[in-house]
Length: 212
Ligand code: PRP
Ligand code: ZN
Ligand code: MG
Image (cartoon, rainbow, N blue to C red):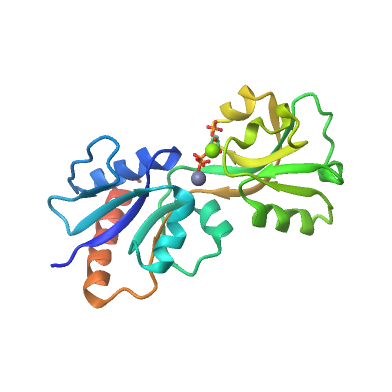
């Protein structure tokens, strides 16, 4: 039997939860520290450990057949992939954060300000919907530090526990979208690959049923 490849976040909020799900599905593999690839022992699956932001593109191209990403990344990247299943973990929100001393009263206060984010498309949609004209400053990481170093007036980033915002002297003022992990698939799987995916989905459903 052929193997299919699943892309999982290398390190970050999704990684541990994704690997936990694989384990709960009864799939065994050995991932040596720092390795970017691994093969399951008892299921036709190969793992690729990648940056989450790159996963939708790799799945669209077929470099990976499957992937686990946050809905936030999936929406932002606008790639043509199948949205197979919500996974119910790694829940978070994409929010606006501002200096905690800013007496923030509403979205209109963002007019004329600059906002640092790794999610420029989603942020633009939010600003347009609210008819607010603000400058979007795209950066790929450490977004929350931007206000304190004078790079931007506000941030738009993922909030989970809120500790990153807190430790950077920021507060959450607007929730733009809620997000959780989602299983995605390449749109042109062959019959054998689809069969493996179906078996994986069957196991995921069993795990989810067991938690109800
Ligand atoms: C997000 C965000 C913060 C952190 C917030 O990163 O960029 O770094 O999570 O979580 P907290 O509210 O619990 O402190 P993410 O895990 O999405 O990884 P990435 O930005 O490296 O892709
Ligand atoms: Zn990321
Ligand atoms: Mg981050």
